[in-house]
Structures are given as C-alpha cells and as structure tokens.
Image (tube, rainbow, N blue to C red; front, side, top):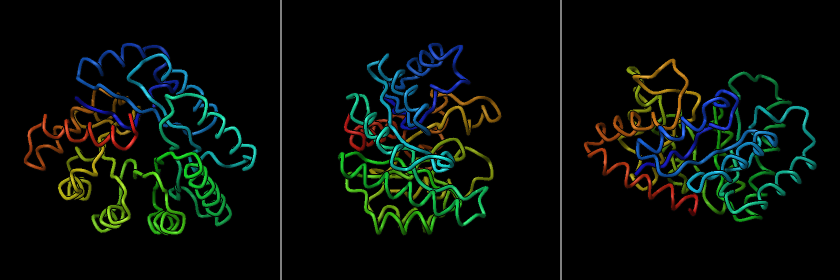
Length: 257
C-alpha cells in the first residue's frame, strides 16, 4: 500500500485523462492520494476531484508564489470557508516561502506575512500544514520556531541539506521526498533519504512535476511513486513493501485519514 502525499492531478495537464491516471495509480497499489493546492481557484478543483473518489483527499492553501496581488484578509476568509467545507479537506497547504526567483524584499516580506497568517489559521482550525520552501531554509525555520504549527507540518519536496533535515526533525516535522531522490547526481537527497527517521518520512510525487527515473522529462503521475519508493528502500536496505507500509501509515497519521 502506498500513499502519494502530494500530487496535483487536478491541474490542466491531466484534464483529458485524469481517470486513466487514477486507475494506473490504483493498479500500482497507490491506495491514498493527497491533493494540495496553490490558490483558491486550484483549491476548488482539488476539492471537486477529492469529492469524486473515496481514497482522495485535499489540502487548501496559498502557495508563496501565488500571493502577489491578493488581499490578505479576503483571501484568508475564502480559505477558511473552503477548509471547513468538507471532511475531505485534511490539511492547509501548500504554504511557505519561495525565494528561487525573488530578490525583492517586498515580495519576500509579503510571502512571510501570508505564511505566518496561514499557520495561525491552521492552528485555529486544528489542521496540519504542508510547507513549500525553496531557497529559503533559514527564514522558513525561523518562522516555524516563532509561529509553531500546533498540529504538525511536513517539508514537502525537501531540497535542503542533511543539517537542515535534522533541524526539521528536531522541531517535530516530517520530510517529504519525491522524484529527485532517484536522480543520478542527487547526493544530498539520497543522504537525507538514508538518515531521516523512518517514522518521519512521507512519499510523494508532486505530479505533474519532478518525474523520477526512468520517467524523467515526462509528465509525472502518482503511479510513478513506485520508483521513488524503490530507490529509498534500496538506499535504506529495506524491502519495498516494508518502506511502503511504514510511509503509508505515516501519511495516515499525519493527515488523520
């Protein structure tokens, strides 16, 4: 049994074949799927898809790169309404900081404000959070320490060092690993995969992005998670089934499904 804890199969890239994509996932023993969202409009798509399948759940959140031009108060009210709209909603995310294309302090500060306010909303409503953090480790950790997520957090698509991973674990967080751990020269993701405490590891695809080897360059999809699981199980000297079972339970525990 496998839990793809982060995938975006409600996006336009899957509009013509999402049912086939879901069937392939099921055929590859993907028993649970989590759909995080990036914006209010995407959140509505994720929720609509989650409502179609008993084994699909969703998270509602505003991605840091989607905050430009948004009114904070209005957005938070819309977000809260969606978070409370269905039992299929299990988390708030993905939220966080993304400095990859940003040098503007104004933009960074806006991202920080949205991140903090969404953590506060998650705490108010008793939701775990899914964190997107790229090229922003120090600020992300500083915010988590000052505004602690009370109901759990995961660093989705973890891309930082072993040392940062240890800080995340010390703060009570989970680590989400996906396609890059299969890449030939991915030394750091492999080191994280070997050393992350097994009870703090989640598997994900981030489809349609970051397809694993041997599908690198293709549109990613949940069925490809078997390649992620296979690589991590080899790195940890575990059987494939053992790794899948533990991470499946980790996902259920984290999202309360």
